[in-house]
Image 1 (cartoon, rainbow, N blue to C red):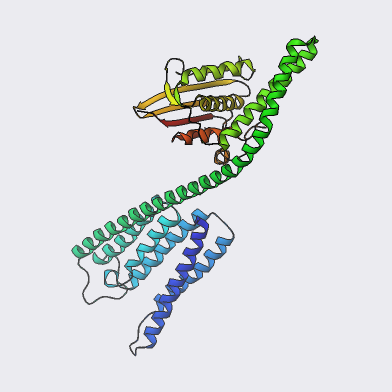
Image 2 (tube, rainbow, N blue to C red):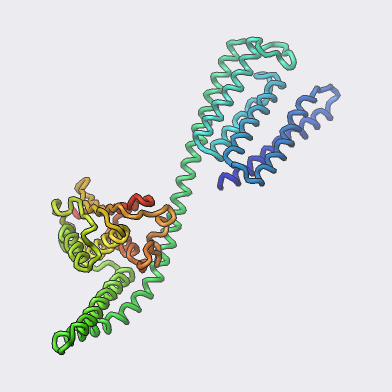
Length: 415
């Protein structure tokens, strides 16, 4: 439940409590022959109901929901303190009502707000009770046995402890609830993405197999003709374009097949450092990595071996490196690092100082056909995620607009 809806429920519950108190008091007064001086009580209850109507108007005007909540909770403390005062302080029965604003603050606002309201409740209650006990505040109706200062101090200390304990508990449980809700939303999103991947995978597999073989035949035929025929430089250039574009389409189809098929079982010890260097060489030859880009990191010094499928990791390094270069339109620095925090874990990180991403873009980064680039096809990060999932790993993306992006992959190492 969001803060705005929670605030509306607070207004409704408060009005219901006030009306219930007013009706029950009227019934009790009507059922006894003894005169009960409840005029002040009714005045306080009526004021609270009128304020609830005002709060409702402010709510629908959508004026600062956070500050509305703070205002209402502070006024609630004043009303409760007034009820405690006219009922005789510790001799009365209304001091338990202090609990409700503390609970509301923790649920609607935050753990910090719960402690703030608890502190105010402690000041209001402590000031009233001690003021009555030490004769600094006159009793509304003089009790037959006034509360002694020692009992008042003891009660105030206990009340303070209870207020802050309630603030801590409501803050803790509300924070746990929010985290659980966040995890549930993430799990739902993950499940939806997996469903989309499964559906897309079936289509990808069929389309890729239908295109791949004739594409290879076209590319091979062009290469043979280029070698044997007497061609002009312009014709050779056109044939080179056909071969290059065929290879590009072939790489895209390869990604489709990775999405559609389970992990290949051709596993061996591979050098991730060499794969990283080979990827950079290919991107440099294609012109995507140029003199405006700087490549840093320990990937050349740290020779990392990993037990996996070479083609999958070449695809992973290609996609992440290419995305980083695309994000640095005017050049920049890409840092590729390997780290082994323990014997069972390998971390691979790609960090650029490019355009970065917003929180909304990060939410959709792994969804089918979503791309943050105008020339993107929206499957690169899907492929990366699937490869990482196939190896039982995790992928984390940390990015801020205009501050760059860091993609960190954590993989389990073979013993």
